[in-house]
Every structure is written in C-alpha cells, then in structure tokens.
Length: 271
Image 1: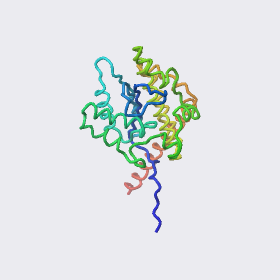
Image 2: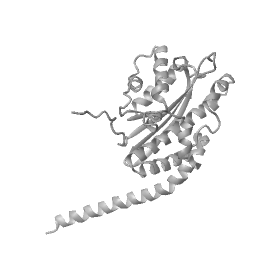
Image 3: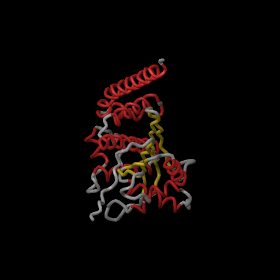
Image 4: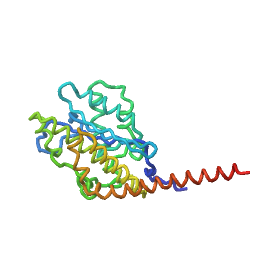
C-alpha cells in the first residue's frame, strides 16, 4: 500500500497570527559573502500581530532594538512572549535563519526556559504552526527574496533601508531607522501571509477584510505613520472597496439569519 507524504493543508484560518522579522550584525567574511548564521547577533526585531474575534480584526505592531535599556536578552524574551500568544507564527526564511539565530542567541544569553521559542525553532518543516513563507511560496523549492514576491503582489518593502544597510546604520548610531525598517518588514510579512492564506483557502475576504482593518489601524495610530506606504499600496487599494462589499454582505447575512430565526420562533409559538 502506498503511503502519501504530502504535507498537511495549511488553508484553515488561525484566530491569531504573529509575523516577525529580525535584523542582525555579523563579522565580515574574507570573501565578502553572507556570514554563516551562527555568527549573527540579533540587534532588532519587529512584530506584526493580528487577531480576529467574531469577525473583528485587531493588530499589535511594534519593534524593539537592542540599545539603551533594551539588551539582546530582552529581544529574545519578547519573541518568546509574542510567539506564545499566537496560533500561527510566520516569517520569511524564518525556518532557515531567524528562528535559528534566535534559538542560538537564547542559549548564548543562558535563556533555557523559553518554551514558545523552542517549539517555534524546532517546528517540523511541514507542520502547521510555523509558516515560513519563503518555503510556502516556492513550494519548498528554490527560494527567492521577500521583495521578489512582495513586488508582484503590490506590497511595499525596503522603502528606505535594506538589510545590507543595517550594519552601517548600526555603526552610525541610526537606531531609529533600523527600528522602522524591521517593523516595516514585519508588516510586509503579515500582508504576504494574508495573501498566501486567502489564495490557499480560495477566499477573497480572507485578505480584503483584514487588509482594510490594517489600513484603519495604521491611519488611527500616530506611532505608525511611517507605515503609510501600506495604506497607499496597490494591494490595499484593491482590497478596501472589496472589503466594504464583504462587510455589507456579511451584515445582510446576519440580519437575514436573525429574521429567519425570529420567524421560526413565532411559527413554533403560534397556537
């Protein structure tokens, strides 16, 4: 008997999702190539968390940088707390870089009690709780950059800074630019996750409604105005009018169901 080895479906929607991204510094290699991941020290981490309850989306977007009162260990602990609160954790090449760097950094900082981070870094490649979008979009084949995918969908990335600039910015003390950059990448990863989830489940509302809610959150939060590029991007311009139609359709469906229930109750109570 032949046994299927197909990975489990990831089409089901999660109640809460955490997208994250880290920025690191590492010693330069002699040949100028990208340093091996164990040499990387995390200096910033961005989080974009989304949760849906009763059809209402809520967001928590922030970034931490290891300077001043915040140390490397604080970044690691924050990642563990955020991951523990999410049903799904997603990143871009997170299984082969971000999670590995964070797990090794935790050991370097003598943090051996971080269960959520441990589970995240050790998650099975085809499991359902760690969604590495670089793997998913490439169907576990040859990976491409986050920008290569995001550009095709209409999601803004690297609008001011790229990963290759981080070391120089860190050396120059431009920590705020790094903080904004890592936050932007986390939000871009969240948008990419929503696009993946909607396409995988064949449900347009799975991207239009949360994206429209994300735009409202950014517009209403003073500390997120540097993320306005997401409000104005082509994907968002496509999503918002369709989200309104979806909201109206959902409200009409709820009203119709309630009226039908009331009618059934009256018929049951009639003599």
